[in-house]
Image (cartoon, rainbow, N blue to C red; front, side):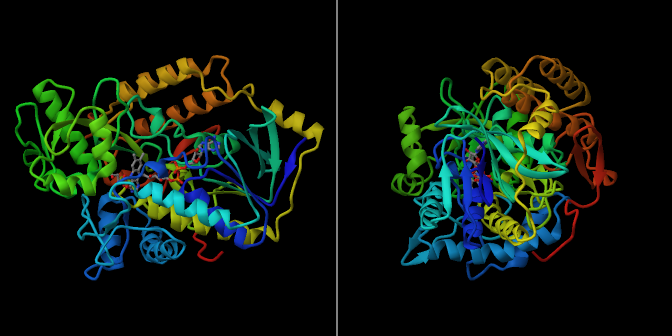
Length: 530
Ligand code: FAD
Ligand code: SIN
């Protein structure tokens, strides 16, 4: 039997939780479906902090300026302005709701991260900022009686009727079978797709499902080629690529090669605090030059007591792997970290598919352009989660709840070219991840991308479960847009086109059954009111 509600939110990271709270304020029933336990998300693992204009020597123009520079010409200025101005309001609200950030003498402590012109990053429990976001937002959402959160509810596809998203197909964790749920609006908040790559800082849930679901349902995808690789993931055999926060370099950590030499000043005058893409590519160049698979993060010049207090989680995790961050050289290398591209949305989280809203890392709002400024993502989840929730709630009065009849359901299912199934086949996943790392990674070129696309087409020709089809399709979207963009900009670097080209100061747009195209602006509607 199918279910009915007023709003569906898919995902329980910062964006999904914040959207749910906003939707609940409208009095509607909110069904939150999330793939794993409620706290499992990229948000939970966020370390460094959240960038926000709150210190005396900062202002929104400075934060906006830094964000635009990092975005390498592809940010939407209105989106960035919205982020930095409303960000302050929403962080203050989170603090009122019980969010606790680190303080000294009662005052918030601000840290430095790469490409920020001010110390504007606030953090929680030293290096567990994301976990504090999750804790405080789940507590706040728990106060809303109309929010019903279902964990372990893997969503696989969107239900579309007459060009409108009317519901969601998910695996019911109790019945252990596929089920439909219908609503007046759906908010996609499934986060990013770091898991597309063999080496990633992202947890296993970050397989980009929402992007693929939206694409198959007919929504436009933007700027999929822009993947951010974090320079410093712990690189130990048999250990996951645990993130060693950029804040460690912000506090004075330096990068050394296998000979113990500091190398970053040779690549960029900003050294360890150059933008992430530059540090990541410099590390790759240095590893190639010295014939190794790692470089080292050196924190030994810093006081041990300070390090333990400032980075408690990193300290403990490294200790688990027999590394003392105050004494040892920490082996690091880059890993996929963040997707700048995603579902194309306007400033109110509206996708190009009526009835489908989206917020957070799953989207492309134009906030990050070609490269995200460190610690802008948690802020984006709060601001645009609230906005998407507000817009979906406002539109609900004029939206009807449409429930498909059994006959139209059968018709609708016939149009889907894959069998229902929850398993992302291990073999498919492993193969796609390897291809993405080797051919669609930090450095790309025409040949590598063409070979990747060919291999993805071979995989897609098989009899795949929906999850596997979603995964390989997403990989193909990244490779296709990376092939199309014949220049290097932000997180996208082409060996065969190393320069930034004016003619590519546009966004790549992909849509089902349509050739890739260019758009001058992400914001397709330019509507400023809800
Ligand atoms: P997520 O937090 O990833 O939430 C997505 C949710 O969707 C999850 O609940 C997931 O289970 C669910 N989901 C996924 N697929 C499905 C499906 N098919 N069906 C149902 N549910 C589904 N950003 C910063 O600003 N500051 C930082 O310090 C920082 N540090 C980071 C450190 C690490 C290790 C990582 C990985 C990221 C970091 N980031 C940081 C980035 C930031 O954490 C994320 O971009 C942000 O939290 C994304 O929030 P979100 O709500 O969009 O997605
Ligand atoms: C980090 O702590 O280095 C991650 C910050 C971010 O991704 O914004």
